[in-house]
Image 1: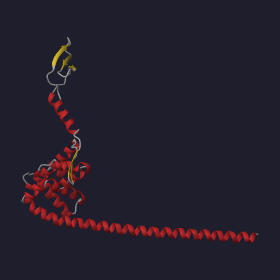
Image 2 (image 1 turned 30 degrees about the vertical axis):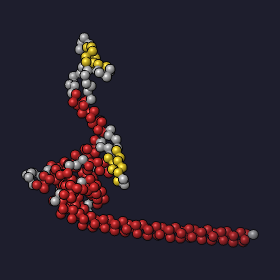
Image 3 (image 1 turned 60 degrees about the vertical axis):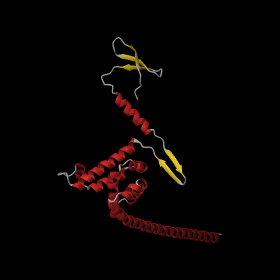
Image 4 (image 1 turned 180 degrees about the horizontal axis):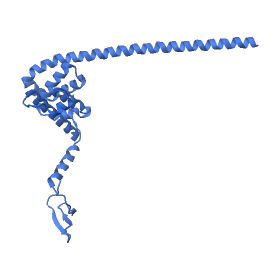
Amino acid sequence: PARAREAVVSTQSTGEFLVTSSHDKSVRLWERTDEPLVLEDERETAREKEYEETLVEEKEDGDQVETTGRRTMETLKGAERIMEALQIWREEQSGEEEQRNVILTSLDCTGSAYVLHIVSKIRPSEMEEALLVLPFHYVVDLVKLIAEWLAEGLHIELCMRSLVFLLKVHHNPVVAHKPLVVVMEQLIESCEASLNGVRDIIGFNLAAMKLIQLDLQENSTQLFTDLSGKVKSVKKKKRAVLKTLS
């Protein structure tokens, strides 16, 4: 930030340089350039730097641990991208625009698919912080879309992780928001169905991997048995040849 209570100490005869002092007993040398000096930009840069250097705070309350992560500029940009995508989805749902959104036209997708694309591009380590800074009216839209995605079986792991975090953070407002009652009932059914489907897939894959493991073990045992038998037969032939020669 710009220093306060600065006083001009000396100037060069040509006006190219300026020396100032401050109440903190420091001296600063200024050089005249063609670019204008905007103190607000300097203050804004300092504020952003201070904001990025926010440390992780952990608060323990009995068995409950509350962790506040560091909000980087990338996290804020991720939240902004989600809000912009949700705004595009809103415009598509309202049908107010005569022409289709340029982004949806270029990607040839629906607003719902575009929001899912944006959410899936956010890093897992920054997902919770990005969701944490969303205003509640955007949270309502996102919960509705998550219910839609889960019903279609899309990105189940991502949807469940995001949904659990949003409900944990916004539990009371979500419960008090009447339009979400029907959505929550749909989520109960779709979550159960989606989790059962994922559980079946995992169980099937584990059974297949165990079968492959048993098959490999049997083949390796048979291979070593065949090799040992061949070695024994070769040794017998050598002995027979040696006896004949002797």
